[in-house]
Length: 88
Image (cartoon, rainbow, N blue to C red):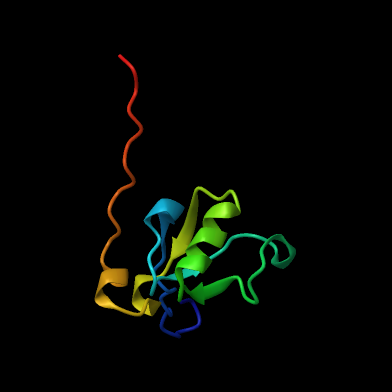
């Protein structure tokens, strides 16, 4: 930076559709703390119930940090959500 200190890279995060969430993923909920039942807005998913709760919040996607996720499956890019079939 301008004062001679090296820039510290921000943690890499991307967004992931809530339908692609898996146990072990470290996610960020971009909601106020009163808008969800979790103790923190950033955490590692540890149960199917947490995934169900996140999906019930009405979010289409959440921020995800692969490098803070727990296992190889969670750090791999999630599959794209299935496309809704459109009538022709």
